Length: 413
Image 1: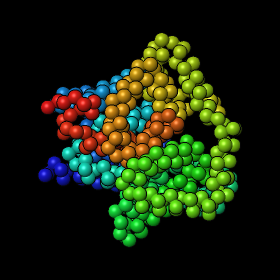
Image 2: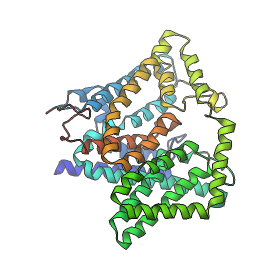
Image 3: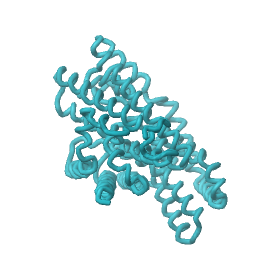
């Protein structure tokens, strides 16, 4: 019982960190301030000494380590030490190195958090999901405040991202998808107060979707629409009345805001015509050209702290790329890419397990994760790591044999 209480304290600390993140911080703050220090303290309290044991591989000696956790631990240790030593050897600035190492820890949060939260997963998953949705709504509200609450601009003109890029946070898309799912779940259970709560959740989701639409986030909007439509058959089998009400509300919304919807589609098409894939292929080609200059760079990358002239941002020298694999190639070379692929492959069974067991939650989590890994720099953000943690914690709960069973189906008892 005492261990469960400690684990729940960590969960509440993580929820507080996410609330601060959405209310006061930014997805990628340029300079750490008070908010970031508080968030960091809460994260350290949540993970305990796990970063040390994972970084040294000591967690592999624990009994019944799940398959995904073993692969992730090896990938984390390699990606931490090899690019770190390479970056130090090449003389990169320590501030730049730390700006790469901290996001690496975020990306591998499942390795650090799942083992300490596993025994309270039943409570941790809904609490962390609620905190993620809250962070997403707070980011959206802050963006609307910066935009002067110009709701009438949706579909009329493409609005600015803002200096902090608040809408790039994966939690915004998570809220846009998960909150309508939660609203359907409430409505399916009946009762006037549940229907009222469902309407509140839909309004919060509309703030997120409206912000993404106003800023013409094409991939996020497509992922949200496709994800919600994909779960309709699942919902229809369980709550046909709630689905009918949702469809009627959606049709009425489109009818009332028809001009805005048509304008949003036109703006997305025009953005696609003008910028296409936002130079992602050119960016990957520039990374490959840089590391191909020598065999050590090709195999081990330029190390944490490295920068390059990125064509996706006008040729400025920056330390990031917009896809995880090109980032891994720049910093860690071919071995770094291999480590990332091993990590993702280890998590794939968790994604499949959750899709079979809980499609609404799976879609809500996987949509922002797909964009974070392949669409922009969100793979470096805190909420990306929390989403991955929710994914694994949820999937482990739905495996047919207990938590000592590997996600690949092999029994370790």
